[in-house]
Image 1: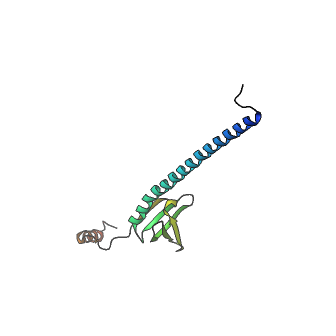
Image 2: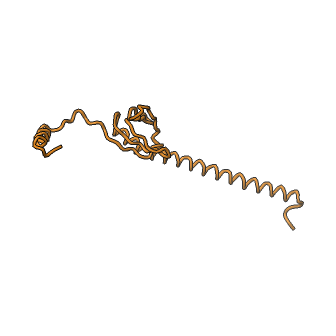
Image 3: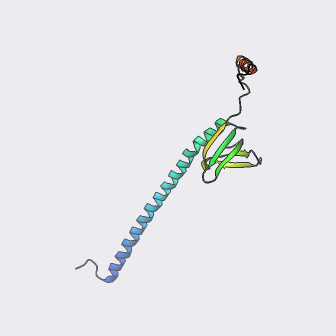
Length: 137
């Protein structure tokens, strides 16, 4: 004998079990999707930190070459630095391009020279003397 008295009881038990399994599956899928979203956000933040640090270290006016994911390279001057993005003005067209830190894969460039640090007068004099005798550029 089965614990079910009729087919109606059997179908009710089957529907109840099926709904329970679906609810548990939906709960597991939703929680794993939320965890994956948080992991992606954390990786974007951690990936953009070195780019932001490099841009801030180069400073405004620096000559840079920017590699953007899927869009190639851009060359120009850093003209604006914000919290979430920075702006590079193209050398040839003088058109500004704004880049989000997380979309940039690589930053290379040179800072502007520091006007406070001067070359030593002795080195400059030696360079001029060597150039006069034909040994230098």
